[in-house]
Length: 316
Image (tube, rainbow, N blue to C red):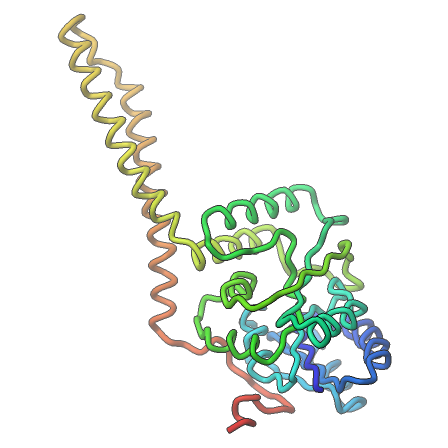
């Protein structure tokens, strides 16, 4: 049985050696499995590609796909799925925050217990800034309330899947991708493994707070239309409040006279309503922009060089 490990890489020059050494231990332990290490170089600006090529020269199990520029981790995952030829396919990070030591248990769950995929989640966020941890938990609570897709709190992209699960993911060729949601959307029988948070072995994280925030917006827009309903709700609510305010002012003017003055309060109300309108327009714009990107039908990534072939082409 062939197991392909997809490893998205962006400026991971310092971590690659440590990752490969850990994977060697796992590969030696799992003698019943043939391995393929598929590194996807996502337009790295350091010597990541050179280090991958060195590993490929040393070990024939190492394959690589290199992009023409940085397309993002979601594009790297999709490319890895397309090029993966394994009966089982695993997605994992090169910084060892996804412990390779879990692979034997994940493999056993699929082969012996009949699961279609084995996913992982962090049960702690040790070493992560408190503010980021707070907003991450709030995101998972929100997305699970407004979406029908189950996205587990602390879920990682670290996942082992059988060929049926992978082929189902490849059917979803959308440009705006949110893999955590796609994993849940395709369904199948999934087992969850929990582990304590592991800090990076080397290098620095590429995910700033702003990038994580935009990524969370991507997930909400991709798997829920509730924000559109909320925009309509705010519109109806503001119209109702405005109607009641007008009636109140008219009645007070009739009863007391001279009560229709109050420009400061009127300006505040106008600014508030203007803010609500801009918020609703922004929500509509988010959905419209993603529709615009989808209809252009641009490729999710562009491969500059590789030492392997796509699984689909191999089958053909």
